[in-house]
Image (cartoon, rainbow, N blue to C red; front, side, top):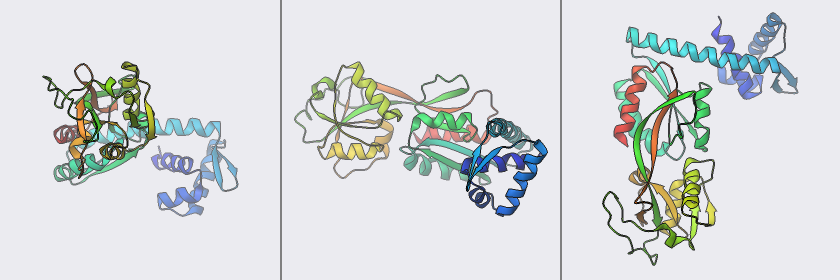
Length: 303
């Protein structure tokens, strides 16, 4: 089988354009056009409808790319296994994570990984919506994803990296700043979140895991929040909280890597605290090369 053929069609479908695909594939546009024409003629079916400069998938084209992704995923699994067998230490690792985590996850893990595997390419797919990370795994774009996985997809498997505590961040000039209690098992002073039910909140969007968690906390404690701002940035929300603009949530892992001149005060909340699990997620029954397993351990140590 000509795997190059599969990659060419996938690239055209992704870009909806011959010219953009040719540029990405580092081949000439006429060559790619001729390649597609020959392929469609040999298959005796149209994979794309031409609408001006746009290439729109036909139903046959959709079926083709779905199978192409699966074939290339299986090929990669085989290549990875052969890599370990011959131990040439060459390969590629595609890591998916939220754009919130990447500013510290990449610098804390990539140098250590490249020191051990200098000839293994490592690429990051950073998503603004962490709820889409499982899609990157299923369609084969990512080999592993680091996120607060809900564990409800039968096509995926995972292993826990860390239990993260969800804290409440408030300005150090807030009237309740000295009301926290030291409770066994809590890293931060504990406070009843219901005492803030009249305060303004800064939260993340619901399609982000952090935003989804905030909504679950409000539901659990029957709080109808006054949301003054939604942002995709956890750091932005924490900075605004430190200025007294509102109250935000933050996981303890984020706190470890956020440096602020005027830091807010962090509280444990819940009974006695609220935690969420951070996972390394990958496709069920897929072959995990040694370098991927080692990367998981590097991430676990960094957190």
